[in-house]
Image (cartoon, rainbow, N blue to C red; front, side, top):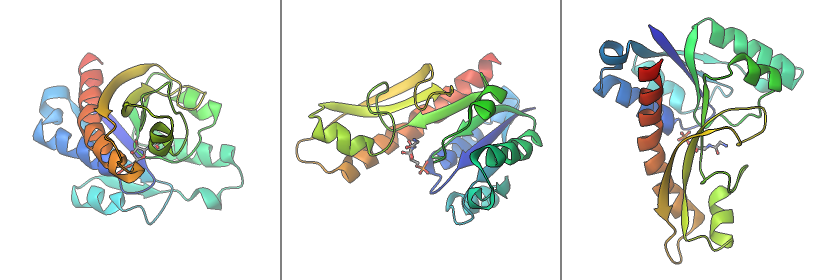
Length: 193
Ligand code: GAR
């Protein structure tokens, strides 16, 4: 069985979209894959309850309880490795990862970012796209490498920026696309493994 471990920090709507896709498309039978665990660095992450309701193992590892970024990532890797993952999926996991962590999961570490990379790495992507006068915005699924938001692009979706819309409105429309492209990209990767 190819185990998927999903890392979240908050709402977990991308994680939920992946879990729904796995259920509806019967990834266990069709791809020999399943979401084995959801791990959060925040105990109050809303997505944890959703994962539990769907029978998925959950783990919380509070980064504030760790002495350093390296110590947190080392503990996180221990938690993840218990599930022997074929794929580690960052889904709104708001932590910068150490190069050692990224190297450990090279080739099996994915992220989704709410911009059309390489435009707007980092935070506040939608506000920045509006302020720059972009006519299009979107989201990117990419392989994670040591440099933040820079790894090879796996999938993108584009949405038009509407006249006068707020960053929140744009974010909501982009998020709808995230929920489509992330499960699809993961399914395609798993089918090639
Ligand atoms: C998503 O929009 C995701 O692209 C973004 O956080 C949101 C998480 O939502 N990720 C980043 O900004 C990573 N740099 P979710 O918790 O509902 O999936």
